[in-house]
Each structure stands twice: as C-alpha cells, then as structure tokens.
Amino acid sequence: MKKILAILAAVGLMAAAGTAMAADSTDLLVEAEVLAACSVETVDNIDFGDLDPINDPATTTASTAPTGSAGSVRVTCTNLTSYSLGATPASPTMTLNGGGTNPIAYTPVFTAGPFTAGTSADIRTIDATVAKTAYETAPAGAYSGQLTITVSY
Amino acid sequence: MAISKSMVLAMLIGFLMSPTPVLGASVTQGMQVAATILDRGHCSFETSGPYLINFDPALDPLAPVERNASVTFQVRCKGVGHHGSTAIVDRTGSEQLYLTKGSDSIPYNLNLPTSEPVLKNNQPVDITVTATIAENTYRNASPGLYSDTITITVEP
Image (cartoon, rainbow over all chains, first blue to last red; front, side):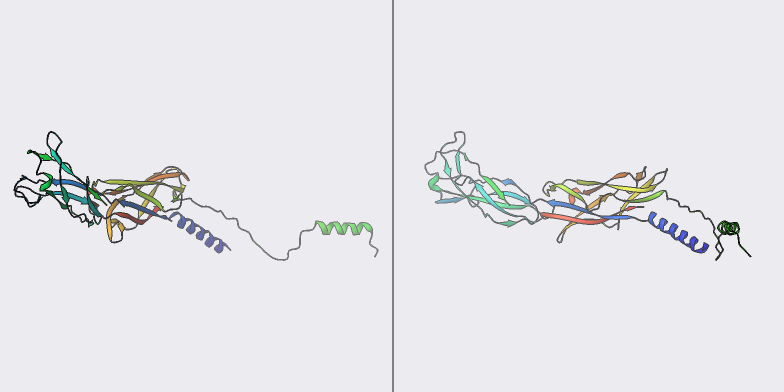
C-alpha cells in the first residue's frame, strides 16, 4: 500500500513539473499591401524649331524638323503595373508669347499603350506635328503652349 | 434452572456493551501530502490567435521608406512566485522572414521581446511584437497583397 501511494505521489509531482515546463503557441499573421502607383515627369519639351510659312512642307514634325526635337517623359510605375498615356487638351495650341494670341494648332503624336512597367523607369517619346496652314498667316515671333501628359494605370 | 428477568436484562446489557467482534485485520499509516508550485509558472496567450500585424497604409514602391507595424497581445502566467518570472516569446527558426505573393517576396524582420518580466501571478502582461520592412526591399515589388504566417510560442 505504501509503495502504491509513493508511486502515485511521484507521478503527481512529475505531472506538475511537466505542466510547468509547457509552452503555449499561436499564429501571427503579417500582412502588407503594395500599391500600384505611377509617376511621370518631363525629360524634354517638344520643340518645332523655326517654322517657315513660305518654304515649309505641308506638315512639320517636331522630331524631324531641321531645328526641332521631340519631347519625352519618364514614366515610373510599380513593377508589372499596366499603364497608358494620354494628353490634354484634346486640341492643343501654341500662342504668341507675351500676348497669348494667334493660336497655332498642333497635334501630339505618341504611342498611348498600354504598357507594362518593369523595374526601371520608361522613357516615352511625345512627338507633335503642325500643319503649315495653321501658321502661314501667323505673325512672326516665338510661340509656346502647354501640353499635359497623363499616365493612367 | 430458572432464569430471572434480572439475569436476562444483565446479559442483554453485557452484549450491547461488549466490543465489536473482530472479523479481519487492518493497519493504518498517516502520510503527508505536499506540492511545490514552481516559481517560473506557466504562461499562455490570453486570447487565441492568430494575431495580426498589418502594414497600413499600403507600401508605395515609388516612395519607399522603412516601415514598421506592430501588434500588442497579452499573456497570462500562473504559478508565479514572489520573485516573479519571465515570459519568453519566441518563434521557431532563425531564417529570414518573407512576405509573399505568389513567387514575389518582400523580406522583413520581426522584433520579439524575448524576455518580458512577469511580476504578478495570474495577471495579464502586454507583449508587443514589431515587424519592420526595410526601405530598399520593396522598390521593385509588384502590386498586391503580401502575407506570411509564423508560429510564436510563449514560455514557460
């Protein structure tokens, strides 16, 4: 009888010790969302150079004009984000500097996309054409206008 | 031989007053019962998990900065003696942790308070776990929800 009681007591102490050594576990969930985001900045402005109302061809393209150059924008998006380009206003014009008069209509030319962004920024060319009829009666001087490039994603 | 009423009464009283007849044998032995509640006690999570660490607002790869997010939960330790105890929160493994979305991943670190003092028995103790995503680790991450689930353990 004594042996049985002693064994039971020992088993009880071992069980108590086992409980004290136990640990409790649970799950920890960690979450983060990565945004789809894009930014755009102007690298080069569009420049038609010198326009000659008498001798120019019917249409002048900025990128191929003798003293002109196309514009470009740098588009940076989250990796693998799909995006497209747009331009406003729909019918842009240049006006005589200082007066804001005598508008000359021009047409932006660019590939709208859609594109898929990579891990580095994309340079997108923004070209433009202008018809000789738009400036053949315009007074001489420097003209400028504002074109807004929009990246949609 | 005549039996008088007084003799019958005397016999009955004698029978009732006599010890109980011994039919078997037994012995008894007193013993002490003792137990010691270990000072380290036993700790458990106050509420069942999973606990959530959520990086909010979302990560912007175009403006990356170091981000921290944390969760505070409680553990309760029983069997804590006068000298107090220490709750140890740990996770299995020591490898780099990653938030994943398909095959994409963002590494992160987890700061566990590996020794939180427990001063009182059977009282909830706050435990704060902080996760950190380094600035330059999600510049090229694709959009979407990233997640990871790990197991944490409180001891003893």
